Every structure is written in C-alpha cells, then in structure tokens.
Image (cartoon, rainbow, N blue to C red; front, side, top):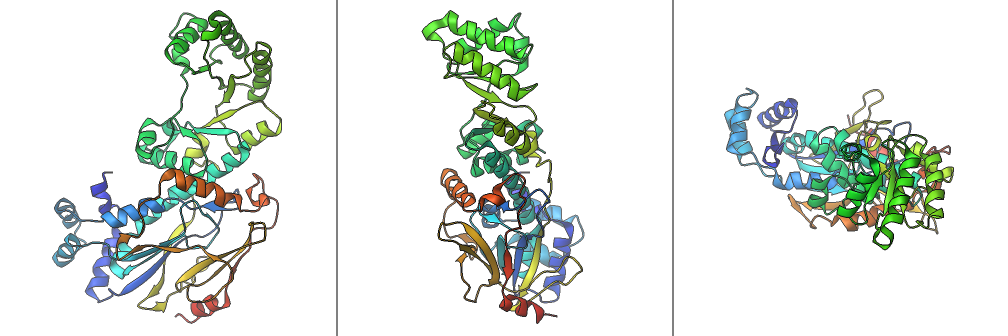
Length: 440
C-alpha cells in the first residue's frame, strides 16, 4: 500500500456510518479510546507500539481525486459526502502513551478526539498499526529479557506476513532492544544497524568447506562463518585451521550455529576455539529460537554471545493476535459506555496514573478520569493538537533507550518468561466508575 492510499484503508462500515452521521447531524466532538481488552495467556504486560505511524497517518490524511473516484464506485456515499471528503483534513487532538511504554489490559494507550465522522473513519488504520506493533513489541521484549544481556539480531524478514509487516517489525524489534536487523531496507529507512552472515548455499557452491571459508573471509574482514552445513564441529575445526593458515591476517569475528543441539555445539566449539587461542571469536546461534529456547540455553550456561531470532518474533507465534479495540468513550461532552456482555467499556476522558515505589519500580496503575486528582504519574500525553504534531517524530535511538528504561521499571516477576505471581494491579477510580454508570 502506498502512503497516498492510506485514507482508503478503512472498513466499508466506516464510510457507511460517516454518511449516516452527517445526514443526521451527528458531527460534534467524539472521544475514542484504543485499548487491549485482555492480555494473552503468555503475557504479563504489553509494550505500546505503532503510535508514531498513527500520528504520521493522521497528519497526512487526504482523499485525492483518484481515491474519491474509487469511493464513488461503492455506492455508499452521497455526492455531498464525496465532496466533503475531498476537502477533509484531520483537525483533532490525540493523546497517547509514549511508544515503548508497558501497558496492561483495558488501559487506553491512545485517545482520539475529533468530529465524530472523522474520528470514526480512522478506526481501521489506527487499530491495524497499533495492534501489529504492540503485539510484536511485546513478544520481542520477552526475547530480549530471555537473552539476559546477550545480543539479539532480527533475522525474520523472510517469514514476516508481508513486506510492510517486516519493515514495521524491524523497527519495533530495535525499539525494544534488538541490536540489529538483517533487513537492509529497514536498516537504511530507520537507521538501524544491519547484520548478517552467509547462507548454506554459499558453502555448497564450493567444492569444499575450507575453500568457502577462505574466500568469504578474504572478501569480508571480521565476518561470521556458518559452520553447520555438513558437520558442525568439523566446521569449527576448519575455522581453526584457517586461523593457523592466515596467522595475523585472520580476522573472522564469529561462527554461527544454526542446527542441532545448540547448547552442546556451543560448548564444544568454545572449548576448541579457546584452546586454539581464538577466544575473541564469538558464537552466534540461530534456528527456530524463541524466548523459551533462549532462556533454556542461557540458564544452562551455553557460551553463546549472540542470538539470531526470526519467525517466532515476526509472527508472535504463541500469541499472534491481541484484542485491540477502538471504542467511543464520549460524545458532545457526555460519557458513553458499552455494556455488552464480556465486552463492556467505561465512558469518559481517561488517564492512566502509574505509581512507583522508592526504588523506581512500578507497583500499580489507576485508571481514572483525566479531570480528577489521582496519585501517580500520568501516562497519556497530548501529542497532536488540531491535526498537528506537537513534537517531531522521536529519533529511534532515543526512543529505544527510553523503552528499555521503561521496561526495567516493571517488577522482575512480571518480566519473567513464565510469570507465576499475582498480576499487576490496575484499579479503576470511583469517579470513573460513577461517570460510566450514569450513561444510558
């Protein structure tokens, strides 16, 4: 999808409601909250993502003449609606938590305040961007946590669900703590360090493995050599023989293990390399890794310096979707609630107040009205006024540092791969409950 087409990225019912809203005079200010209804079974918290892309979309929202002609073929909108859309600009306000903020179920990570037809129209795109990137950020944070300070590299572009998802994933993974990506376009676009090794096909294209290693190392100083094409340990020995052959000209930086018992291979490889005086050669491991396998390897003391992770993170394989919803919280100054069974919402303009203990560890949140005084640090901030960003897009490196710091404020028990403690406490203020209960 090209950026100029984004205005049409909406479900048909958004346009059907737009016509009915305008036809019946429902065009005053509406407040919509985007929340995640519940946490997946494997998650104790989520990491907010996708907010920067939403702000870009809202700021650039336009219906070109080509898009208007496309809409006219649907027979959903009147000529007056089409004319109105041709002049549409988003002129609302947006409140959001900073991208990378830990969040919990039913907490609004973004609030849109705009004319009802406009606020409704943007629903599909807003959910789409925040759903994907929050889901991926939350999975990636667990992988980084499992690695316990070891480097993690994004190898997942080829298994992502489309090129756009791969790009958004690369940025999101770097945001939460991955150190590099194999995706060259993402690296150049977002300023992310890129990393990569070689494929088994390079080795297979040579008559023997030593020749392949010799050629690749001659072309790429400091490279990583893939040692498991034929026999992993024999591959390590070939690297050692290459070092003996080249002497001071040897500049291989790492070997990569991609199959078999990674822990056992890493221990054997480390012993051989160290005995040969190659203690500076690092060990990279890849191949079907996720946070559980990484935690197992780290816990067993496997001497692995870098983990390459792909499919499990790019697809968030154990929790591939979130219950992201975008619901009306107020219209024309009146709180609006939804009371559907198991899908109820609280009306009113809300704020999240986070409390910390003396050590800086988060100890609980209160979801309250924005207008009330509640203990804690407010997390939602005005980021767009009358359709204009209040600050430029935050540099990714700065956002990454802030995200890593924000995650570190969570209790260690929540950040564990298998949390077995009581969930983080999120309370609802009495004022918010009262405001919600007065709606009909």
